[in-house]
Length: 142
Image: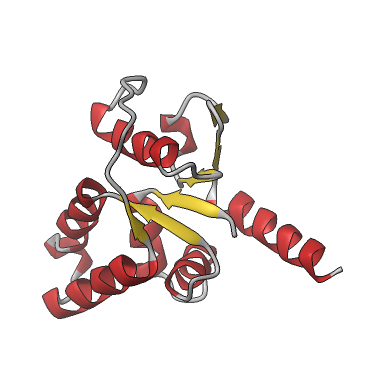
């Protein structure tokens, strides 16, 4: 199973835009087809962003969604610390990916991550991840 960490922007886009690629990626994670890696700190950021008034998500919907992520994803405690990004708050995603041995970090803001691979983790857009997932699925069916 592919293991991935999703940036907060992927979560927000997936919930805001039904039938888009980020929404498909959320479905893959919540249905257990992608091993979504999380930390308590990442979940806290998801909650903080999703409860902002500009998104108009109800508290109940956010709580239900985060509960589903916790149940279907894997919450880990980071064992690796990095300080490589301009925005220090983004380092937690790479720490999670490295500590959980993720294959991919999926973000809609690839410009915030000045490298395509960090150590063993590939940094990809939602569209790239979707294409990779489909290729892996087709390969496994052959």
